[in-house]
Length: 117
Image (cartoon, rainbow, N blue to C red; front, side):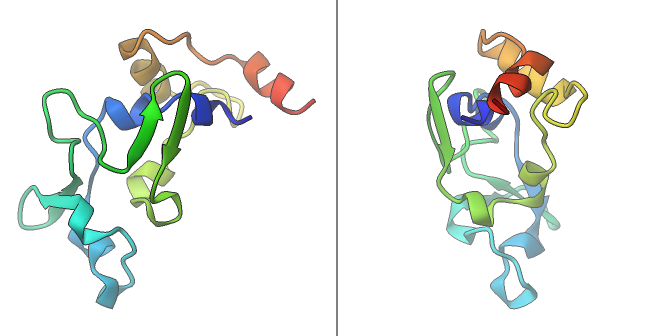
């Protein structure tokens, strides 16, 4: 099982901001606009991520046990850009920071080697 499916920490740590066009279907945007809130003239944020203790509205998770994004195929580009540590052979500062914030151990290369067996 992919480590992100047992984590969810990044979705409950960071503000998810995106360009408004990502939620405009006429411009090819796929992010459900109802799940966003306006930050400024050019940016939206996923609801819940602008809070003092962020948690994305699209997150269905028990952090560190099970996790899923309810809009995974439609998620913002910024979410697509966050890699899990060592997934592609290098550590991810964002992944490490989020896991640490939730008291989870950092991922290691071994987490991926066991996935491939």
